[in-house]
Image: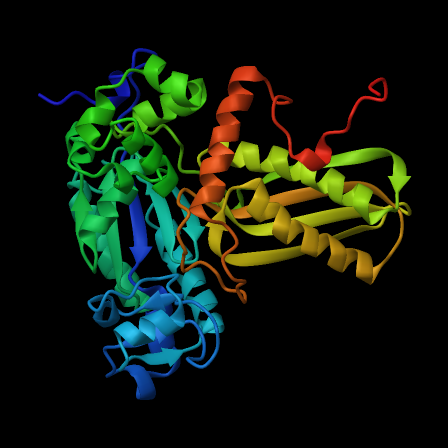
Length: 417
């Protein structure tokens, strides 16, 4: 008999069995593009969404016909067209996407006491305690009725994964695509996750996989063979416990109605107003290091970067940029934040009393997502950046936050010759 993962951890107590669904729209940008131009696109199986073929850019979404050729989201458009030269390239139908996302939210909120939109094209539903309301039907039955209702009221095709927590529900959705339902039964979480690859785990990116492989950990079985103390020796206590639970399908993260507004930020108020750009950039870098560290500690990635200034006259100003791929390193975030700061300074060159950086559009993966509705910038983060940042996290966890800082923030002591 498979034990519930909620009781497998030595420091976990039994909890109420939750019933969670993850609803994901199948290639939403493609569906919305067809809805916006049914006469021109309805009969075309090969569609790429993301911009004009003669311009630089990436694929925001690809039809399943294109995916059969190896095309994927976030791939350079030029590469996608080499793989699938017969594809029709269209821009994002932004107004249609916004409208359909609102309709999707309205439908889902009628089905669950807690419905949280994670992006424009995906949502989590917590149906815990609704068994009597739905006449004790299996969760799969409820999911299929939700699927039909979404199709009827929005014309959108969705896939639905389900289980006892958010992690398992989202992982299950990949087995449901396209237009399917896949439910992991209560008590089967550990067995289900055990059949996946380490790289399938949400939040485990390529650099962490390489680190594990370098330590001889290449399968879920070998990862599960490690205890928390061993993992903590490599990455620190918090990340160790996170990974120990992750590979067993344990996730206590609640489905919250404000999921889509999650953010990480850091700001500082100067003891004296600062006018010099160099001083502002150094302060911004320090706040970026702090915010990026918090982001990685939570196992999250950010797609939108915002810089905030409060001028000496108490006027607040900010500027944001949304990227095509989520990032989590100070190197990548600061590269964008510095440009935003310089834009703000060109707009108004005046002393500042506060500076801060905010990270939003958070997700558990560093992949490109369909939730980007604004014009996107080129990717700014490499796997090497992520590996270096995580190595720095381990040093700070072991020796303190001041043990390792960007060279720009390290000043020699005045007592030294």
